[in-house]
Length: 392
Image 1 (tube, rainbow, N blue to C red):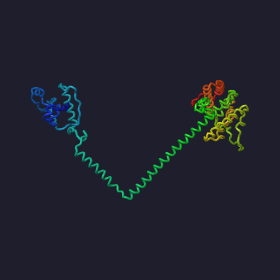
Image 2: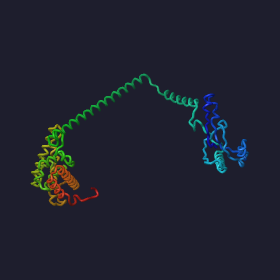
Image 3: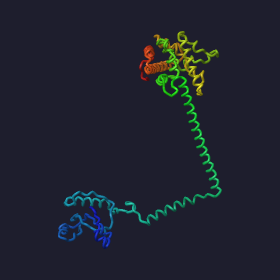
């Protein structure tokens, strides 16, 4: 068992005068645990040489120093050695391990292969490996036979494909440039709308209208801002305020969007409102919606004025007005063909819009509008519509 090894270096002064006189075998000294005959330790101390073990029973292990030329082969088997090999007990334990290794490898201990285990190859082995690879490449090339006609046809197809790829890149680049141009034009139109409605100054500074619009996200912020600054909310009580704002969150399923009736004639959304005191505020709201849509159209942005106004349906006005007046939810369900879930969803959106208008009123310091919206919120949020459930 190899314990350690040491490489000997020639003396620097001697190396300058006569070169390196040490041979390859003499450059390395190896400390090896060898089986020796009994009394080998005393023989070494006396200056003699230890004798090999005559039998396994009397064998002793001793560390001896050898040169590299005394080694015939190395084994790939590794064994653990104790830290202290000076004691006889430690060396005897290693002897037991070596005997166990020999027992397991009855056919002989496997030797260390320089090419497989150490990955060290000679020039001849490397040349043989490259030759095998060359043969494989030649076999693959031998199976491919292309004539001049086939090559010319393939090149023609390749050129067409390359030309199609270049054309595709060019078209995609033109599409991107067109989209950027359209986006720039749309942004310019939006800025014109904000300036004409008073949200931005000529210098691009955001005014009070712009600050209010920034607080609204549940409904059309442009129309909500126009309703706030037109003073339409001042003459309304909290219940009327909530009923008017219901037009901004109502869906087409509630009716009152200005479509055709059963007789084929166009319906008048305002005339369909049962609560008479709500007709005038709703009519004024629709006029403001028409003004906003006209400004957007004049700014060269795509908009249909009639469709824009029809978005704000009046089908919830009576329901919200009666609900804020204390009506039961069962009575509201009888007033419309819409599903109960649709009514509840619209009520929740209306409450969210009220909260956003309250925040907008705080931004501009309109305490009267803030108090009126808070009162409308208290009338709206009650009973089963806003009862907490597993789904909200």
